[in-house]
Each structure stands twice: as structure tokens, then as C-alpha cells.
Length: 212
Image 1: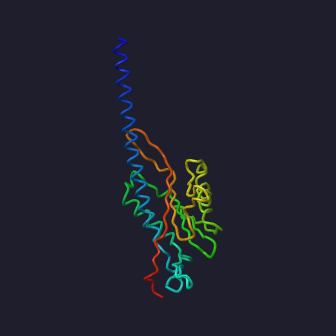
Image 2: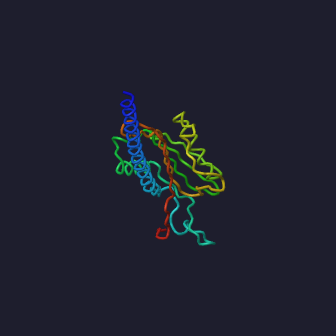
Image 3: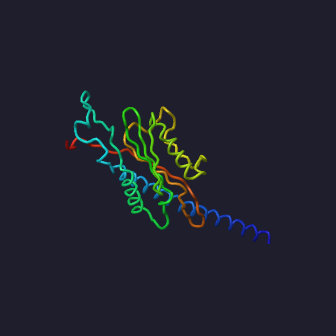
């Protein structure tokens, strides 16, 4: 009996281990697919420039002294960007299994003089805007907004970290779009996990062919 019991125990442990491995493998695959969908969505949405509010043309697009291309005053249409983001995300991800429409927060930034202006929009339609002295402060503004919408977003697992430290700042003065998605539910074989993902991208501005 003892040998049979030990054999059954070992068999159970082996099966349990394989089930856990399979469960985590499915979770990892879905998580990576969602991450790619977010990347594609941000890349597309960040190009939705508000032409009515943005400077256009060679006169405003280039520095007269250096000839360098400028990105000051190029503003994203945050409403259109949100629609583009959701459209591209849903086309690359199963919407029935991953509905983010109620858990999405997006932030658009643009340079204004020596400062950086931002707009933060939640899927409910509420918009918060403001200006910061340095692009490194955008990270704090997004986390503060997320905490206001979702009080538990202040824990370490839900806070976004764009800048490792001031010397490794990944955000510059310019036109960027940030996406923050809270509590994405991902189901494996047997278990369901939640995670918070974020992504950002800069607009690929090309004024060379702009018309005055």
C-alpha cells in the first residue's frame, strides 16, 4: 500500500506540475499578444495630429538658424487618438476576451516653449490637462491621474515607470502618446490573472513636405 500511495503521489505531483506549466504558458502567450497589440495601437494613434491646433509649414517647422526640424506646438487630437487606439488594439486582440474600453487611460504631450503640455483622458470621457516644466514629470502626472480614477493604482504593481532615473530619461520634449491599461484580465488554462500594462511612443513628425 505504501508503494502504491507513493506512486500515486508522485504521479499527482507530475500532472500538477505539467498543468501549471501549461497554464502559465497560455497566460504568457496571451500577455505577449496583448503587449504587441498595445504597441501597434500606440504607434498608430500617436500620428493623429490635430492640424487645427498645430503649427504647420516650413516657416514654423524648421529653426531659421540651425535648420533643425522642430516639433514644438504639434498637438495630438486626443479624441481621435483614443478611437484609433481602440480600433487597432481590437483588430489585433480578441475583444470578447480582452475588453479594455473601461480601463484605458491615455495621455498626449506636446512641447510649448520650454515647458511640456499634456492631456490625460479616461475612457469615461473625462479630460485633465496641464503643463509641466520637465518631461520627466509626465510619469508622475499619469500615475496621479490613474490613482484618482482607480484608488488601488498607487501600489507598485500598478504604477508606470517610464524613467529609470534622471540620467536614463526616455521622454524628451515633444509629441508623445502614452497608454495605461488597468487590470487586464488574462485567463490561462485554469487560472485568471490581472496585470496593468503601459506603452508610449513619439510621433514620427515629417515637415519636409508640409505646405505653407
